[in-house]
Image 1: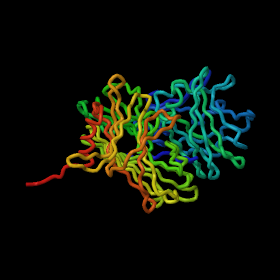
Image 2: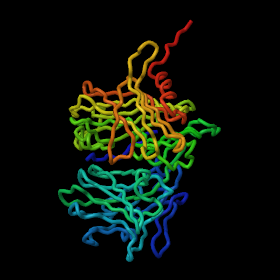
Image 3: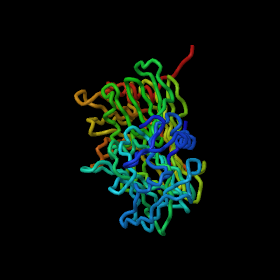
Length: 477
């Protein structure tokens, strides 16, 4: 099962339903909903739980949208000139003259159609956009609340000429807004060099969650995998849960002490390893994809479940970089991750890349977790054997018993030393590994242990690190 993200620029009703019109009855029939399921089988067909915000087959839906700041009524309207033919004949025509103009979807006193406000039961936002030309700056934002509004702004999306299907993981949105009270959605283009007429169709909320491998006995340590939104969720029952997004670990939960999954131990970023460029002064930018824009201004990411068994789960993730006039082929620059997750908490990883054009002789690999969760960072640097003793490189992130029980042990396979990475504006605890670049390529492999939860010091961590980095030879009599 593969999940493909949108191309971005670097720099609940069972059976489905429509958002309610104001002061009227919804006339959606089963044939209309069946057409939507047939058009979006991967996202709507498995559960058939979705909410149509607007499919533009009802003229009242146009009253939900307006252009700001001028409020020109002629700039927005339902049209039959362009539409997703497999779902209907109507689409919303929107005219934008410059980058300051925005199309706003929100309730207003004169509207005859309402914006569905409770997005919490869903994990995916779908919509389609028709562009007459390649357009490098489609943007949209989502606002929740009234008295204390919260705002999510999506990274710029590159539109190709023709229809573009956009799939947005609402888990990303939920990190910045409250999905239970959505009040406004805005669309605009920035940059916009000349006026453009776009067409918007099939704005849908979907619950596409499904079990890819279910645990049979629910015994401690039993592995299971599910897909939700654009994410893959790997769970070891009563032990840990890892959530993968765009090929990387975005969430980590200690199920022994946090069964409700209230505390994401990655701290809002990625656990790692995350490739970064190292500045001449030694500075790095963590979780800033724009630093790789020299590989190409566009990034396309993939995420694939390669293997799922009671023993292990293997996930492959990849970012490919390119330009609007060149395809994302096998020769394009890339970052690639392969994770093998075992029920005992071992996460074996390989992070590799082809970074032709980056002009780098080494890259940094960042691994970290949430510093505000009370983690303490202890680094053991590699040391050559002296008699019976030898130290291998490892880093232990441990929570004191009075704070929590989670521990993260990081052991690189080839023994590069770790260095402390500090950023006053970032609450995470991180370390940096320097990896050489040869022939425009790099490879970094190692082990991360997210369980057991009693690796409280290097006394417990060092033997685990040694067992991985210096395994005893197997002899056969």
